[in-house]
Amino acid sequence: MEVEATAIPGVLLFKPRFLHDARGYFVETYNARAANAAGLKTEFVQDNQARSRKRGTVRALHFQVPPKVQAKLVRVLCGSIYDVAVDLRAGSPSYGRWVALTLTAQGGEQIFVPRGFAHGYCTLEDDTEVAYKVDDYYAPECEQGLIWDDPTLGIGWPVSPADAVLSDKDRRLPRFADFTSPFRYDAGR
Image 1 (cartoon, rainbow, N blue to C red):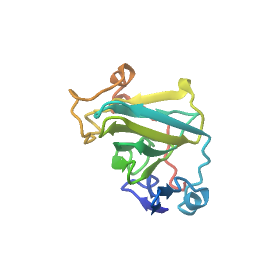
Image 2 (cartoon, rainbow, N blue to C red):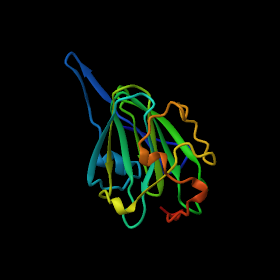
Image 3 (tube, one colour):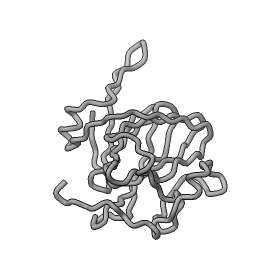
Image 4 (cartoon, helix red, strand yellow):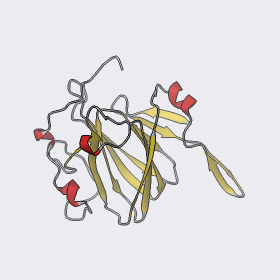
């Protein structure tokens, strides 16, 4: 498995190796030794999966606040997504900046989203399925988010606000300018 750094330190792109033969393919989607060698010391405790019926479905910028902060390892099972991670760590050199990657089922790419980041994605195809691992359990009392099309963040989403398919909950999320971060940047981590 190949691991690449992104424009924001800590956000990683994992590229698995596919072994093809007459039957199809085999791919190792996660290996703790390879992850540790890349500097990832996360122990995942829960797997989640989401299916979106329509192209242009946006799963907004979600995160959990302390004490139940989560890191995520995201991959696509079917279809493709435009995946976004936003740095919410106060004091970080990249605070308020975002990185976006296209993840596809065919390519098997995965993005690691560290603790202290918001995460969201937009489906690029109908009937897209996404799976992700998290390193702490879902805690609804700690769940928060930011509006997906926040003008301060200026994320270059591949869908217009008029065409985006959103949940009612995601339509009501606050703006980044109204957010006081509970996350702190630690240069030594």
